[in-house]
Length: 51
Length: 229
Length: 218
Image (cartoon, rainbow over the protein chains, first blue to last red):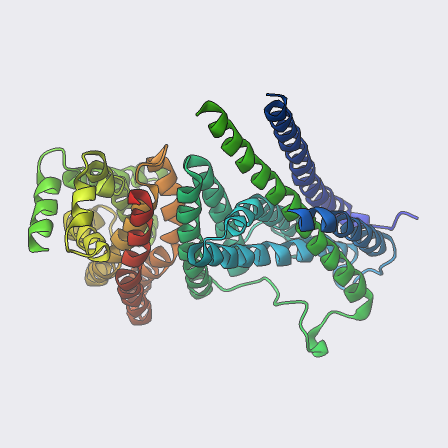
């Protein structure tokens, strides 16, 4: 199953790994910040209604 | 906001599916190039990210213009949301490109016009985001960053020609073009296009998520301001 | 307009005005280079044009954040904005004054420093020409950057981050013109490009800078 990378293994896996890792990082950060802002906004709006 | 909320799930699913298909296809089921060997597989991450990195810049240029002309708030926030994505894509393209270069050109870095332009673009993305972070009033920040983006766009074109003048390139030309003659062959091309579409939808997903976050944050500050007064 | 120019020049030339500071900084940067790369005249001659250009770039940057900052702090900027002079013209005059007090001294000092870097004598004229034609672009691009970052937190640091990438085309053409001359090539095309770049920035950046200032004032 695993393709034969030979002497290119380091560069191929390295570039795939770093690219996917970086893209995953920004995705997770975006999702986390979206969740945080959503929670903060909901809390704030509940507060306003409560008054 | 409501429309983006409805579209978001579809866009994200399309992104995940296309990326999964394209990446697995590219990694496991494509042949090696007769000259580059297995290192040709780097094309499936490098080219789509680099392609998007440039086009995100272009998108920011357009949204900045829209903000300056029409004062459409979402437009400015979309540009703000896009910049970090652009920076990450640029960085990933640079790193994967450096690793690719290490095997095919025998060097990680060369002061080649294409590489240099990307490095400049990366610095620009960082400066642009830093400016957003440094100005407190949202409208002023949008104004200033939009102006910066327009100046930056003009100078990006200038830099491009300047760098060409300054150094001969070793980076190959576009591997994708509409006239098929120059294209890489189909076995590489089809998975590559799939990944490119996937990365595009991924960018759209991230852009929607981040812009929604920005809108929410703005609403939070507005509510808090009202609370205090 | 003339009054404004005279005011700018007087402020800059006054002690603590920053004009002399830029020149001194230029001196130091260029003098530091031989310590970094070693005293071999052949190597020094080769890197002399680039060194002088980068030194000029940094020296220019040093005095840029004062361009609008002090005027913005003491309110002069608001008064100037209300005057009949269009904001674009104000920016142009201020950038021109910046060039007269920072760029021009560098152009004059560059040949003296080129001696220490053992640059071939016959290329002096080209070095001076490239700096003379290129430094206006540095001042005018810088004015746009300074207008954007005036009154911004950590503005000075941000200014360098924003402006230095924009200096790249000018640096490339300018240093290339001087380097081509010392390498025996034809420096004319690069020199023309530097001149074109300067004209381009002189014509366009005042508008960007004025737009940024309006946003600050408005």
